[in-house]
Length: 97
Image 1 (cartoon, one colour):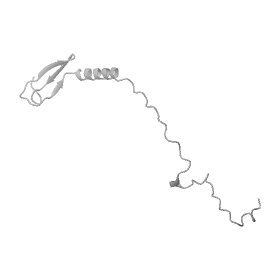
Image 2 (spheres, one colour):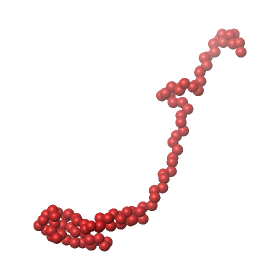
Image 3 (tube, rainbow, N blue to C red):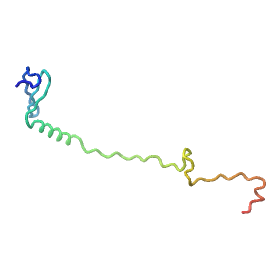
Image 4 (cartoon, rainbow, N blue to C red):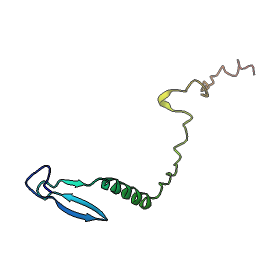
């Protein structure tokens, strides 16, 4: 049979794993007979399913705990403490507690 692309060279026939493959030595084109592509796909899927086990889920690594206070964002509106003023010499006189 002549190559459909080159039209000057005859196709060579090779049999691989029970599948007949026609190829052109000039343009390196490959032609398959009816049903041979389906056979190739079925065999590839079967070998892939047998060769690769199901992936195991990756172990989760806990991240750092959330920060209670981050100076970049201010006090967050709650939970901050007011610094007490230094007591002066009159502080004890006016302390009524």
